[in-house]
Amino acid sequence: MSTIKETEWIWRNGQFVRWQDATVHILATAVQFGSSVFEGIRCYDTERGPAIFRLAEHLKRLRNSARIYRMETVYSDEELTEACFALIRRNGFRHCYIRPVIMRGYGAIGMDGVGSPIETYIPAWEWGAYLGADALEKGVDVCVSSWSRAAPNTFPGMAKATGHYNNAQLIKLEAMANGFVEAIALTHDGLISEGSGQNLFAVMDGAVLTPPIDGSNLSGVTRNAVLTIAADLDVPVRECTMPRELLYCADELFFSGTAAEITPIRSVDHIAIGPGGIGPVTRRIQRRFADIVNGRSNDDHGWLTLVPPS
Ligand SMILES: Cc1ncc(COP(=O)(O)O)c(C=O)c1O
Image (cartoon, rainbow, N blue to C red):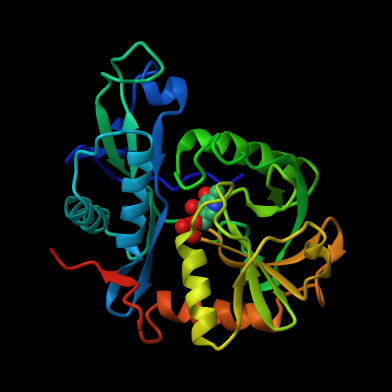
């Protein structure tokens, strides 16, 4: 079991509070009805200091998630950017995982939550490889989930909302109960969607394939980076619907996500993928990604935001 590595300060509604004081009421709408939206963002340790990966894109998705759920946001992207900088400096991080949350707080009795204040929190902590220490190098063993992702026009897939993660938990818990690290979930009509908290890619005949953003999956910031990196490396990319059985026939498979970064998949349902480890195309994309985020190669796409000294 991994637990959160506690730090000292959390940003809450414009102020810093101590880690243990960043609490919410049991009757907050967010607690009762899952009414909150959030982001997961990585800040990397580079030679030029801490650098946040694609902060603007994450804040844009946060704002869109709030908009979909009709939450009036209180802070501008500029204010949230400054808050992230201040949080990183104040906690003395070289690298960290940042988890901004916008939620409906305590007050309203109805499940619409209208009348509950909109609260904004930004916690951050140091977090290593999400799917295990060896995962990035050796790959992970996964299954296809018996749980589907939500159908379009049920839960809005483009929103990163906490309530949606009940579905993600079912997917992940079942996988772990059956001895797998993760699962790949299908759409309501049986096509490949994504992992519980990662987008999915396949490599077939030299091309990189990924399911389209179809209402069942999240429009991942890392997914977008992978598509860009693959194109930069002259690897053909295609967004296309993918049947389940493509998983078993792929030359390579990998997950992408802020937490998982680029994690190879070495088997699905006990069927080895390709040679059963990290494949050559995955390795090229993973290396380029790691070089960019760690500041070792040119940030041609302007993905890193350096945290300025105070
Ligand atoms: C359900 C789901 N899909 C995909 C992703 C990957 O998105 P990103 O690359 O923006 O972290 C995440 C992680 O945020 C997720 O929770």
